[in-house]
Amino acid sequence: MDVYGGGEKKVNLKSQAVSGVKWSGVSMGVMTALRFITLAVLAHLLSPSDFGLMGMIMVVIGFAQAFADMGISNAIIHRQDATKDQLSSLYWLNILAGIIVFFVVCASAPLVVGFYHEPRLYHPLYLTAVIFLITPFGQQFQILMQKELRFNELAKIEIAAPIVNSAVAIVLAFSGFGVYSLIWGQLAGTTTKVLMLLRTGLRNWRPGFHFSRRDLRGYLSFGLFQMGERSINYLNSNLDYLLIGSMLGAKSLGYYTLAYNLIIRPSSLINPVITKVAFPVFSRMQNDTAKLKRGYLKVLQLLSTVNFPIMAGLAVVAPIAVPVIFGEKWLPSIILIQILAIVGLLRSTGSPVGSLMLAKGRADLGFKWNLALTVTQIPGLYVGAKLGGTVGVAIAFAILMCIYSVFNYIILIRTMLGPCLHEYITSMWPSLWMSAAMAVAVLFSGIFLQNMPDLLILIIQVLCGMAIYMGLMMYSQKMLVVEIKNMVLNRGVTVAK
Image 1 (cartoon, rainbow, N blue to C red):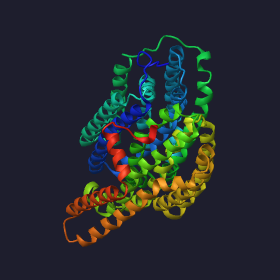
Image 2: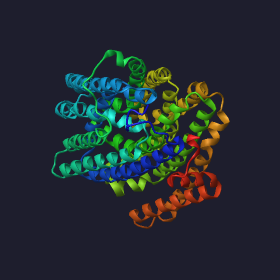
Image 3: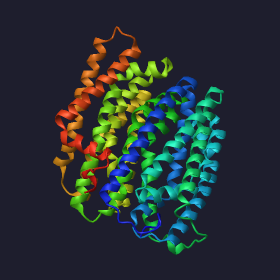
Image 4: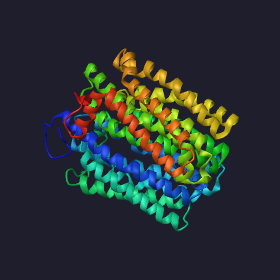
């Protein structure tokens, strides 16, 4: 039943998936460019301590968001038989959860301040928590559009909201608002997104004034595991922020935040282009393991094709890019960028397994996996912070990610898809060697051009890297190039076959 969109539609799943990837790609491209420009401007206007304070706040907010959602979003996508009454009950439950989480975050402010030893956090945390009073009103409309693969509509919303966010943040930063410029930017962007979701969503479906606990059955059982998995996953993904903020202070966290934003954030924007389309597509083929395996390996191939060269390129150009783009005050971030490139590369290959677990209805497996990661990360990152400060944390993070990548296949992928180690490695190998070749060429080009102005060297290195990688792609991966071209032109791609 097509609850959202006014009736049953027999649309080819493959073409829907391709269109979804295409529109998500447009959204991602604009957001990536916008966030990079915004980060470069704000890095000159704000101090490392401002970024560090915002990093501390967003760890708390991000962790709380898992509880505000209650795992319901993914439960709606997973279930193919949602009724309008059920969706209405879930909509009002989301709003109630948002209100509760808002008050819990505000009440926990003294604990947060005590943990970070940072009294400046009180008012910024209270203000940022307002997000939980705004987001729930549009959240379900976004999920329903995602479920129906209406990514052309979502792309416009996801482009507009960051534009407002960036504009407000930059204007206020110029006016001397410090960390508050980042917070007001977040609130403005969130409000814009919710208003646009309401404007688009209410044309197709309106939540009724209906609430029944009976409607929540099935959704909460799936959602509670998903909520636990997401909260634990977010916690272990941000243990580095927690430990650096608590043990080393806001300034050190600021340097780490810049490096993290440059290395990890690209994959967090790029991967959802594929994975948020993959989840609803995988859900529709959840009972066909062979087809699911082909789809998963194709997703992995596409993600490695895009992510690997970005990570390798950033690691090589960081010594020139950081002072040229962000300024001399951010030089301590260079070594962090180079180490975290390993983390970014490995995390980009691990993320699609989340869509796979949800499609198979194995939120419980994801919860157990992320719980194990958290238990092992805490001592590893703590020792890293004690022995080597922010650099020690980055090194420990990279070592742990290498270990986790091995067990990611053994425990998760093999369990759900069966033995496929050869196909698993083969799907990523071309991107790995091409990225390595590109990185070596870019490194040597910098050595030969060292007497030129830094900005010119950076431009040449970037263009050189792009040309080499694209050339290698066209020479050795002709079929993949054709698939990507067809995907862009909406002709089809094997991920949804």
